[in-house]
Length: 246
Picture: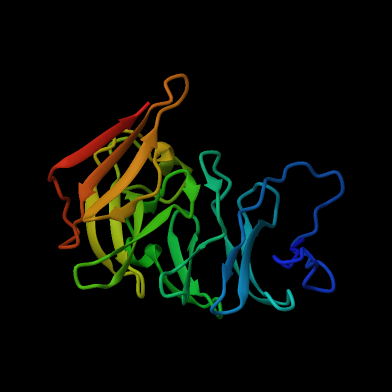
């Protein structure tokens, strides 16, 4: 169920909880749901949940903050891979008009107000999987030299399935224009890890930065920084900075 509580008093905002999905009696194969996402601009809260246990079928619903009333819903898939952690329901774009969702190894943008699809990397990057690190949606934001808002993601050349998270041979940091998903640039990461061990990228002072972490017992994390490459989709092979944290 979805509960609405006052931050000031802790009292319920709605007359009753909103049922999201009925769980059969005795069921145990259910996982922790992702964190809801709030849009103050649209007065909506977005909540993600599994609709069929851990088989990967899931849904994202928008509810009115004022009443809990459902407004729209979108079905998504692919969250059943063991290497994935559905950390947040989605991410609100910098302009607050799009909700970005990770869906079956692709990034999908929908209208934050209506839920209507705006664009998807299935169309923009048909030969690539959105591997995004191990925390979904696994994206960051940046700004192109023209001042346009961009979304950053990790991708590799693989069919869109769980095996993409373990493909060796490297992966890319990809920049897309937020408003329409048009690819604006791509740089190959210097990381030698598989995507399942990588963290989502961010943009800081002209660098695209992401990290990785090794498995126990070493538990070593490396932070990689490569210069932004908004000029084309070609691979940038410039200098890289690394900081190792033990």
